[in-house]
Image (tube, rainbow, N blue to C red; front, side, top):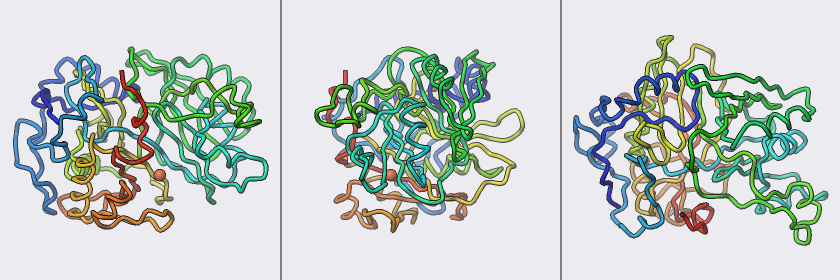
Length: 402
Ligand SMILES: [Fe+2]
């Protein structure tokens, strides 16, 4: 694949709806986005990346496919100047010990759609197992697990407007779920901050601008499918999801580590990243997912915000990402992860990938450690499930894109 706009050195990658501080930074710097300093490509002591140094921007995109044939299914939007090697933040996995709280929360309040691949688990006599709550191109994977998992940070959700959510909140009865309405002063944008039964924080905002940054769709139980799905369709069927997608996921990270985390994503995944100092002297790392436009905004992002707070011990939650635009991109990412010695098999799951052959077979692999690329020491744990676009669950597989 060719990257004709790659030479434009946009380093800032912010998803469409971000936190107030990042939005303020973006507002003040967007005009000069193309002139922002881009860090020379790091030379890792671990030797990750077969790339050459440069002071002018990304030099070799090691995850890029050499084929042009996929280009037709990835139309460019106006104003796109870069494309991260991370294509889609697909799911966030959060264990929950029962369906009691997650069903009304995800399907009723947030307006997610029920994925048909796990819908039978809601049948009256089904064993209590995983549910998938879908929003646009993304999903929440909600397996049974005790204790519940809590993401240390927040999840940014995108809605068409917040009116429906406000109405549903008025009717939502739970003494454990809290909601707070506010406005991002920098952009004058309303938000609703919801904390679920288990302490997970969801920042809900109306989408800004036109178009859909994540144009693929996960399947959902449709409305009026009673013949096939019975009461499940009556209770959970939808024409479309109210929540349109996951804009970003933000993790707390220790002070002094944001730039190192960005370096890790650059080195191992060749992702487009940026690190910014905030008003309180802390820093935030932004990892772009999807396209980056001329203002520096990316379709989705993974954020790492430095904090003085005690960060809870990692509890095993995970995120899943699709890599690149072809199998070759995925394989390059796997090779990089092998060199960095971070490939990891989670005994909890069926896929046990520790070789290229296994990665080709499963079309995914996992890693958990985010490393300091200078010392090799672990900065933090966060399981990543990295998938090829050849993975059978790739949501773009059956979608005719524009
Ligand atoms: Fe997963």
